[in-house]
Amino acid sequence: MSDGPAGGRTLSALLREVTRRCGDREAVVSPARGVRWTYAELDARADRVAAACVAAGLAPGDRAVVWAANLPEWLELQHGLARAGVVLVTANSALQQREIEYVVGRSRARALFFGRGAGENAFPPKVDALSAAAAPSLALRVGLDGAAAGGSTDWAAFLAGGDAADPAAVRALEEGRDVDEPINMQYTSGTTGFPKGVMLSHRNIVENAAAIARVLRVTPADRLCLAVPLFHCFGCVIGTLVAHGTGAAMVLNDVFDPAAVLDAVAEERCSLLYGVPTMFLAELEEQRARPRDLTSLRAGIMAGAICPPAVVRDVARELHVGGIVVAYGLTEASPGVTMSRPDDPMDLRATTVGRALPDVEVRLVDAASGEDVPPGAPGELWCRGENVMIGYDDDPEATAAAITPDGWLRTGDLAERDDDGSIRIVGRIKELIIRGGENISPAEVEDALREHDGVADAAVFGIASDFFGEEVGAAVRRAPGADVGEEELRAHVAARLSRAKVPARVVFVESFPLTGSGKVQRFRLRELVEAGGDGDAGGPSAPA
Image (tube, rainbow, N blue to C red; front, side, top):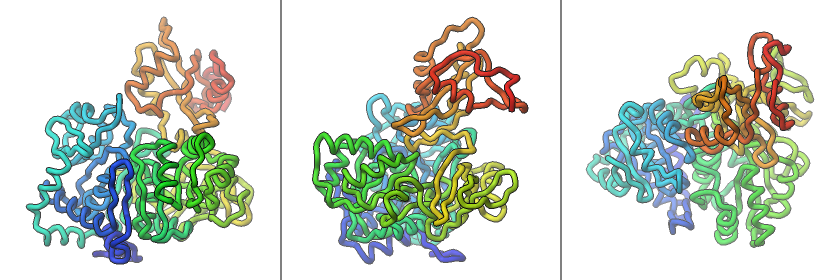
């Protein structure tokens, strides 16, 4: 098994190593599923998934989309696919038909593992509707958790197929893996445009998780309550690999429900708790309504969106997470870049995103000069280290725009640095909207709006939200003679895109404010929406 030029571990080596040390300790607990797997059991299950992949004809470098809630099978797949050299492509559980078609088709996926979904967002009908034209490479569909679709195989049958695989051949595949080959791909809106496949290597995700675990001082005695979705880096790296790199137990919640999360913390005596700010807000309300004994908690991570200082302080006090820290990152950085430390003063933890993680370099750069800015001055945050992605799948131009020739990742976020190295995020260069931890591309929502006959043009941007940090705002120019309204357009978008991308507010304008070079001045449209107005937002002669 390759260690790579600078050391590092594959995902398989990580699990093998922790199983040798902690084989009889709990690795995965799912209260809703009645699951309690030890590390030895998880390791064996990963072997079985790898064998099933080989028997099904999946080869190293093939892509497999996993579209499911936080099921125990998700973790079997994460480790088992890695052993077979198959790239795990994560799919957001809120995806609508056109979005899952985009992910499966764009990634050239050979396999799709899907769960049941829920309510109106049931997954099997969408899997049924995947046509050969939309997913030309797809050869295998496997239902998890009792899910079934036309032409699909159930999970038990898929695993049973692995009995025919040659164990020596399966082990040879595992031993042939290299730490710098892609093993995980996540679709993110990046800085602009439609979602791009971020290719992450074994080294990227394993070493980033190890750095976070060191900062949090995670040990085999810890029990992590995980409700953030596994399809995000927050879940499948900061969650799964922080636990499975240290021998800690991971207590899974299928989907986020604040009562179930706090019940799991109390009943399983969890010591670590993760969440985006909206999750912690809901948990605070739940704890106030029905207090539990949460004194087992010692630390946690809040990340994924702007973290209000008051919420950080309330979590420390009311949820007993005395060591709560705030982290900053992005999928392209695997994801962690900076994080405060559990023993930092509360004021620092509540008002900054901490300092650079171990083995991660950070610069704040002036966009005009390309020079580093002094402490207290704003600059674009750049980072460099083992956490920086391989690149965007099949998109060398976007990769070159994001990563400098000497390895610095341009994040697109504006930040200031204190004298002690602590970072404060103060703005955003890129147009990306972050709603409660979900990255949203304005272009994707704009295209959906333009598909309505009553829309001549649309411009989309982020608007402030006390709950989500940001929400989607839209300014629309109606087509001549059209009288389309806000609710009709919201319903139109909801039928095409996931719920997080539906505009919270739509205003109608006669023209868009433009820069001298003809670009839409989104900040002026944002001001119009936040002021609650419609009308002329500036026109083509608006100053640059």
